Image (cartoon, rainbow over all chains, first blue to last red; front, side):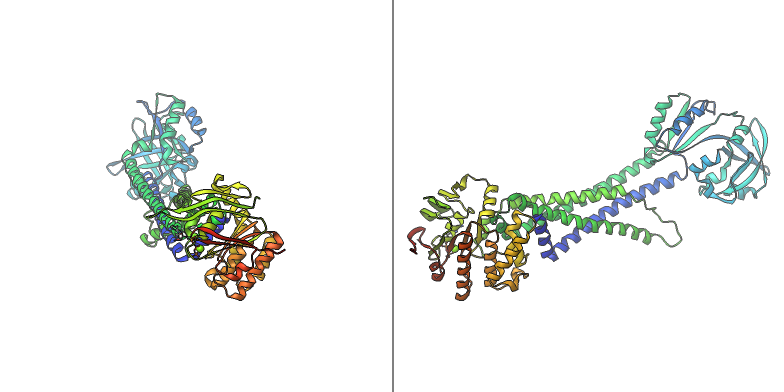
Length: 384
Length: 231
Ligand SMILES: Nc1ncnc2c1ncn2[C@@H]1O[C@H](COP(=O)(O)OP(=O)(O)OP(=O)(O)O)[C@@H](O)[C@H]1O
Ligand SMILES: [Mg+2]
């Protein structure tokens, strides 16, 4: 405790020097936090915007028959996997809409609404009318609506290959922000999908999202093992986006290197400042030793100095770094626009960085502390 | 006879560009509860001798015993403990810690062994400040004090743990004759109240006169050792 008190006094006595080094540490840590959070947010943003609202894992038939048998068993496994956030069975098929003398190809996607909503976020995307409630109701995308000039309540005639035509009622319109989906996809009940394409009570796919996006491949392997079924195919977004992932990995590595370099420079800065401090304070240390402070407590003074510099410097750095991130977002976004990066605040990363800074700063005190062991009081007492 | 401090055949040679022998075959024994003065011209080896007695320096040859224990057989930590609990120092250049106030400096030897100052020790500090007439600078930093005030603060620091032994190197070097006389009285009072053993290095005839024994050193040898006879 005395060592701590002396450390605090040494630091507050040479105030200018302490402020300078704290400033240095704070700047370094803030850049580390800024870079780490920025790259992390950037990666999440890229993935989120690439995937959009789409399933992370899709289970479908692996053979010529488009439908899956005994799909309830798959649903059971999916439901009981604690990594899965949402899932939905789907009865999907191709159809055409006649317009003038053209045939517009569309994809009819039959889903239980509440399940599909958790994956595609449809309710937020409906901008006119409402969700489909009863069978034979359908939701149409913005682009397709414009092309067909439809309104809520209108009838839509679909021609289905091999089954003839069928009529659906428009319940509303959605905009998922992706033109190809808006133009192609019709959302309807699962029953309707099954009926139109004569699937009986089977489905064509089960789609799911997982809690941690980056664990999609692991979850998909887990499910594959559990289900052990050659007739189905389990695909995840990671396998389908390898180039994106290797790009992200490159980013992650360069971010890690920047952070390591910064931490190393913090160590060097603290260690060298404390080394100078040992020299400056050698008279005091000598006198304390003459008065009977033991080597352990004498060296503890410098460990504490390192710890205190690290503590205050890193907290200031955290605040500064997080501030920097928000300032960056504010400066790069004009009012009313979508920010170029969505901030993903990784608490784990912030806490980890803080702990690393603290431990590293404390360890940086070890070098000068060892130096202080060699200090002999006799050399000090002789001088005035 | 066995004293609280014993030196047997102590020699000291400084090794440098040229080897310089500073102390020659010193044999001394200090009785507990006595007041001793070491005098001699500048460079005669007084500080060197005191540093060896204080366990801060080692003799090149010979033995030092404190409380009958051989110093060179003790570990570094045992020595630190011994210095903290048994010996009070007044250094030739007082050496206060500039980051701390007078009171904090005075309490430092106590804080080294125990973290919280007890009420007793704070009271003792107050008493010492009063005895040494420096109550006014109790909360001043040492850099804001006169040389004499610094020296008296250093004396209070040496006395705070009521050690068995006080080693003082020119404790009155910066003081006028009136204050010097005052310090001598304080030393005497402590000596009588607690039975503290004093070894005081001094040029000052006045200070030497106040002690029970005057040891005179010249060129690293004892040339006279006079005990006063009160009887
Ligand atoms: N570390 C050292 N290395 C080499 N020589 C030293 C060292 N310390 C002291 N000396 C020499 O030893 C001799 C005795 O020094 P010491 O400090 O013991 O004298 P002193 O009697 O205390 O003198 P003063 O009254 O001036 O304080 C001196 O000649 C000095 O130059
Ligand atoms: Mg001297």
